[in-house]
Length: 129
Image (cartoon, rainbow, N blue to C red):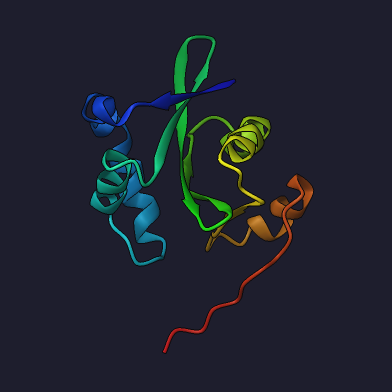
């Protein structure tokens, strides 16, 4: 699988393909809506990468540089583990952006087991007031 960067000027061409799943992801938790991602990608504050395998779209990853961390804002695929399959390329992207770490947040319990296998360490527990 390869991750193909989407130029912000071309975002409109792929938006309808990713928006429904972004909407689903945003409803799982967090304080954002798909339009927030659209604006940040369009303004160059976030990056969209399409997962391409054998010439076919299999999912996407949205990243955002926050300080010295490359944050994986969203990752989605119906048929592949796009985060683990794309991790090598995400690391390369992080190096190019001079990021010192890669972070992600998830409300999914399964990531408590998966994340350490990929090399991630627990970092933050949050209490909303």
